[in-house]
Image (cartoon, rainbow, N blue to C red; front, side, top):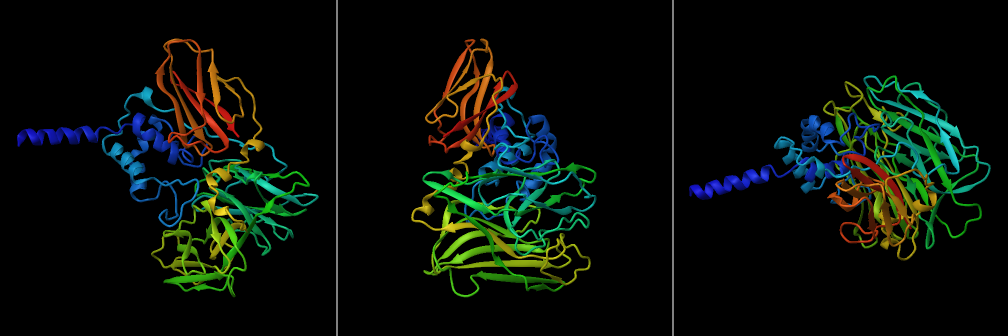
Length: 523
């Protein structure tokens, strides 16, 4: 009995100290935290190195246990989306066990090379760049919401194939929403700090930026070309959110549009619209109120559509929202369920697979608002009656979507690939001196990494990451070299053996503890 108990204790002890930063935790933090928490990022502190992360261990444990971080509002059991930031149960347990056991570092040399974060444009100069004037945040003890209306000056209609939002100061840009108004009926509003969006009803949301988000790249090569219309002389509205405590800091965010060449044919038009909207509700004080809407108001969808993304929107009294369709078969087309609304984390959620809303479908949105004193986000104390409106202290119940007319086979497309498919033709690659020479670049079947500048005894790790900072492959890991030159080959497959999609990737290198990186393109 004593021997058995001793063995059990030894087994438990060995498992409780098995998690280390270098071998288990660093990669999870890279994948799910560092997109916001890196130097120059919107996170209030960086979480890239061991020395940066360990002082924040208690805060991390609290945020993970409270399901506040990483911020990912959608219910993943309802629908799947690209760019998922949520922790899997295994990842959550790994981090919490590591923290509970004193955050051991492990062997420092085993720490994987970190992802690379761009501080500027990923896609290059584009065809049209619009930038807000330099603005000083007024966010002291409350957040600052401001809107800038800027004329595009575009002389003729164009078709968008990519949009990139580049924050002027990523430390204070909590989110930016970009709207397009063909009629130019909006005005700049930077006075009250509560501009929740455009003031013109003809303005439609194009895309949004949140920390860690990627440019919106639509497929633009055969057999699938998708594009959004940008009318001549259209007006762009920036709806900016600067967080509490950023007072006195400056920003000048810009948006870059990439257009198809004039005369390009075969483009499938993509629309964005707030299909679901209710502007007639009233939220009495000290009550929880349900608000709904359907689309179409009368009848059902007249034809088949492919739904590309969904963007639910409420303000500070929002509690939950579910958007779905009822198919002609009476089955439910699940689009998004946000059980615990968080106004500070909103985004277009692109489906992993295009969702077919067939003819005869009725779209629904069901929202719940909490206008009680128990709601910590309630802007009024005591609560007051709140109606629909454009300011943050008003409320909204909207469901935006990107969509297009359905063609057979649309539901078989994988959006992870589609959203990066045209990246190759958009990136302006700068050639600088690097540790490795990468060739051919761009590549199709495989790429070679050659360096004659090493020495015997060097310790080298080489990882591949995608644009979202997710690890794709490990080419070398803490290898001690026996030669002054090295030739590596990456065959374009991920760790699961599957071929990666077309797009740009970072080769992240750690040589004797020093970091460097390369950009490579697969097409």
